[in-house]
Image (cartoon, rainbow, N blue to C red):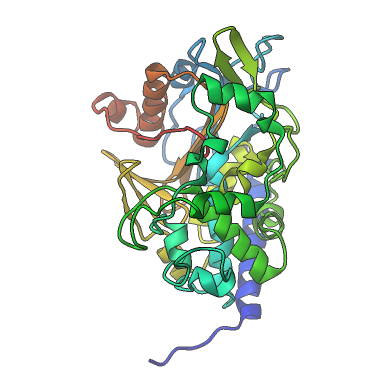
Length: 420
């Protein structure tokens, strides 16, 4: 087969030019878009007419997500063709001050981190430094039993069969006893990737590689270690220099072991019989490359527009990223660090995420023209069908419009436990 080879330097130069053009376009949009009516607390509710149509005001759906006792805050933003079309917040920043939650607040993004990490891996494939069919054993010899049969592709789309390290009793957050243990000291514990990997690969696999689908955070801890081995840098640094810095995602951080959420943010809580307990501070090394990130709705939507708009990957790599397998646990389809949900009005692409106290839904169109991000502070230890139903109603309305949303109950079937 006669293939014209492109050098890594040429590919990197093309990507740099695409990113520069995107950043310039984003700066122009900010200059030309009418300013949102921002309150003193930073919250806003803005609907901006696009060239196609006036976007839907989702404030009623957003307020419905906040269910007293189960959810304390919710914030969301929608965009179309690079322009913010609506943004709002509901609920309170914390249960003591009762200040309104800020629409520009930061939050823990949980497994949305996986999409950042997967994008870096695919860039390394574009540069000829990795192949998706590389066995794990090639890069991490002796780390994974049967590592010669498990490929990077298996890790990225959760078909490796490896067990999730979070199912180990040492990492469980569910149930009153686990929550108390977590709050009493485990929340401050510093975990090394090797410890997380050992917990996952030390448990029996669910199936032979490529013979099924099982969501496992262990896969992405391994991916992060492959990135470190190939580049000589921690995965956080590669995400920063390849995505965060070029796209100017100024409110997106991957904090390592730092327990706080920097900047304005709503607090997360856990529910115990004696009442709610603030769970905002947590050592996020327990998530590592599977769920370490912090961001905002605006930054996530800019990342979505860049990724799906072709600014970060070659067409060939993006095609591989969006090649999906059935994700039976999620009632969806999974690509390489991406979830595809099939709604009555069409496909939406992105990811969901959850850590104790914080849940994220981040979705949009495959052509990169529309996206929305929703964060809500669900109270750990509280199962709330009402919050889940309201979240689904928000997703349906944001994706399909109010008329389509009113005629169907289909939505995002996701569990936000741990680092989903």
